[in-house]
Length: 153
Image 1 (cartoon, rainbow, N blue to C red):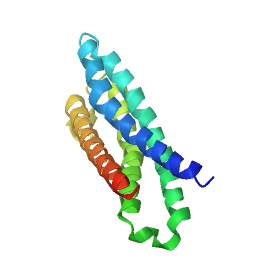
Image 2: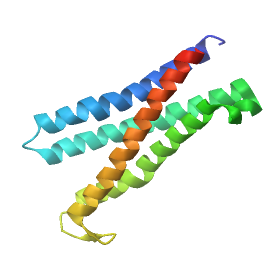
Image 3: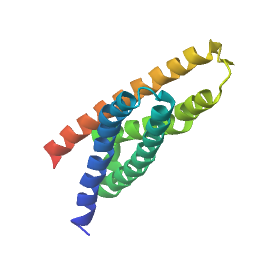
């Protein structure tokens, strides 16, 4: 067990951060390029993948936080890695339970309804921009996590 949990920790970081990068910066752009004549389908598929990596991030992040608590106990609050993972999990939760549902509702609404004072298309573009920005921040934090883990591991 002493070797299994540290290995599972590294696997969790690799799976989560690698998944963020592959889906966000490789697969989604390829989908929209390959399905340029069917952007709604590309958006639906990308949305499903973003939801999947969101759940994976929440699970991996929860494991990483529990692992840190069990390893270093009270000193965990003094470790930057704890705060880094906590921020990444917070972003995953915001994306999963707030922004993605808003975007899904906007996508499913065919009528040019007004949402938060913005026409449908402008509102979707706004939330897409917020989502993309948070995703980028989470991806960069993942890079920092990998670098810190490499130095400590």
